[in-house]
Image (cartoon, rainbow, N blue to C red; front, top):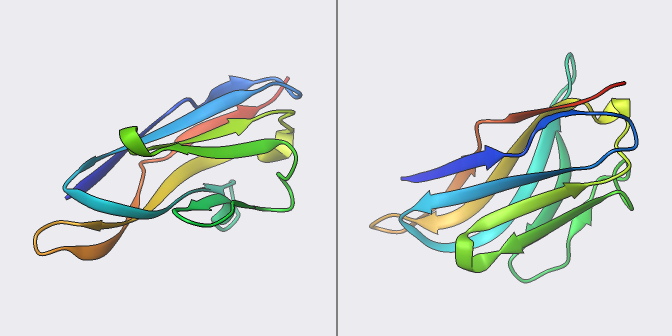
Length: 121
């Protein structure tokens, strides 16, 4: 079993910043990739950013230059620093881990519970 706990959402004014965190716990053998997705009201879930274990980060065009994804391997934690926030960034943000976990080990896709980010004046 692998669990993800997110934190850091909230209400912020346009142009402001927030930092989301997502920590994983459980019988993790290795982490292949970590990422963030978001889902705005009435829209489908979309990729925001992903950071694989051995490759370069990837961002949605809508957040490039404003958001930064990073990871702390020692803490099994992924972060999303969000700057210059816009009202259209309002959504529930979900973290995502692709891991090898358990005994016997197997690949798992694990999602966080979601944290609401509201950008409004």
